[in-house]
Length: 100
Image (cartoon, rainbow, N blue to C red; front, side, top):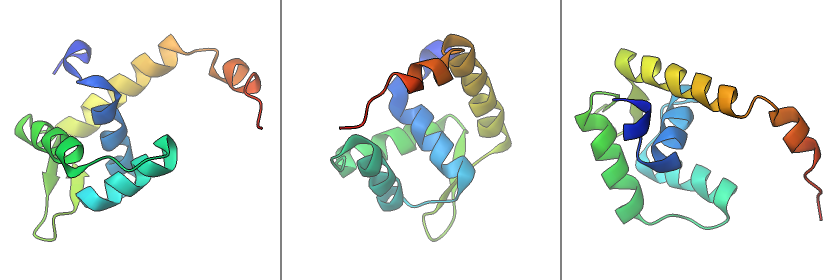
């Protein structure tokens, strides 16, 4: 999968979450809710998980906890590099955020 094939930021976030910790779809939805403010529907989460699984980037166990495959780890590394190359001034951008 090329960088341009990554369907939005959702797949990137899902891969990041399960890189840090194996998670179920419901746990991923909770993590997304923490960042976005509202919980995404199963109709949003599970198609993205299926797509990542079909591409061989993630796998699930019998408890439906998802984890990255070796290919998924390599893909995430590539996307993280692109992200940080693009937002090389992330710390400066972060300092502009004002808490209300």
